Amino acid sequence: MRPRHLFVAAGLGASQLGCGFILDFDELQASGPDAGTGGAGNIGCVDNCNDNDPCTVDVCDRSQATPRCEHQRQPLVNDGFSVSRVTDPLFRVTMAAAGDRFFMSTYGIVDGEPDVQLFGFKSDDTPDDLVEGPSFTALPLLGARDPVSAAGLAVDSRGLDFDVHAYVAVGSIAPNQPADVFDIVLDENLGLRVGDSGRVSTGPNYDPSDPRRYPIAFQPGPSADVYAIWIGADGAIYLHQSGTGISANQPSFGSAAPAQYVAPIGLGTSPGAVWGAEQSFAQILGGPATAFEECLPRTGIYTSSTSTFTGADGVWGVGWSKLDSTFLGFEQITLGCGGGARCVPLDLNQANRCESSDVGGRVSLGTRNPVSVLIESAQPGRLFQVTAAPFVDFGASPPTASIVMNALLFELGNGAVDATVTPLTGGGVPLATQPATSELDGPDWPAIAFADDRVAIAWIQPAGVADSELRVERFRLCAE
Image (cartoon, rainbow, N blue to C red; front, side):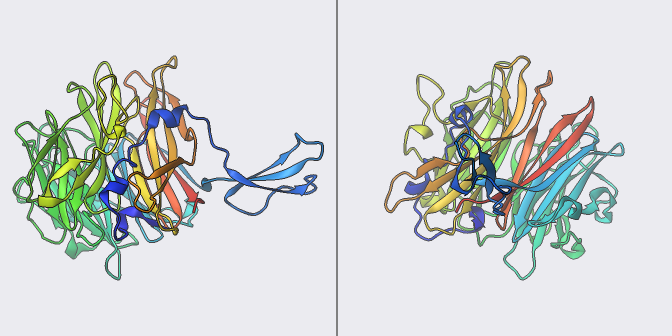
């Protein structure tokens, strides 16, 4: 299996994909868990019921007169790779993957100073095999300055060797001081490629005011270069193409009002951006900027954004989280970019519209900062979407904060306008739950990646009064 963001099947039209990638988080959370399917055997449970299949849950059914073993096949199974590290405060965790390797970074306080730390592991590694890469504060090319953002990770696997790009902002932690962005390039073993690494702009133009924001590294399409995109100190949006040296000197995107969030998109090998200011915009580099309607109220602040390449050229699922004193919610939309490099919402069904009676299928109140990965099945016309979705349950007393993993199967019929969507995990697989703090802190800020046949999810949650806990769980994708 392959991650959909690395491969696109020829002939997959936008009309086949547009509505399918709107997730109904509310329905998923309300549904009961799906036990999966499987077979029965070992009548009488004479021996243990283990069938040595890592994709089944094996139990002895004693409800019948003659007990028998049941083997319930699961779409996703925890493969035993589980990491829990209590650390100084962490702000963000990021991930990327290629081949059979996962790459991860954390940004937080280490020994009283801000730092970015890198990690690597393979799809069949155990937690003891977790490799720790260089600390960014120890890199001479940063000029003894501090990281002020997480590292946006992307892996360029087009050549014989992997190039792991880690885009990070570097500067002073003093308030309101713009920072520089560096592209730190590493090999697959996290060894520094000194000659390929360096500063990418001529002057400080990164806004470090939000420690959970970072330069986002991405590829606009499967054959494209790696780019990075970030919000500047002037509220405009800057773009850098890897391998072009110090070139991110002028804004590439922007609007009259300062951007509060940005997410990358692309068309072919051309990069683009979706951003939110007083309203949301989408633009491919060199094309027109298009404003589009939001369903969530205009008030509030954007806390994060996300984008997922669907595999159809120019078609992206994008979303943003928003917070104010009265609501917390996530809004998502499917954008199609095509003729004239113009991007528009794909209004294929009600799930992609705002209803007058309520917020419609695009919004899930209580959900925040979700991340997704799309995976191509070995069977043509089938895609899997795995999502890690933080959620605050305001109906509990006190409110609880949790992260739930959901998996969906998309079946793209021949000539069908809409994909057939099948939930594989019912109400989802709970990953972590805690009482929410007065600031609504809890398990949050997840990252997700797919390598080989495994999905890895990392997130941050509070530990005690001031510390954080880094969690990583890896799952085998058993659905085909």
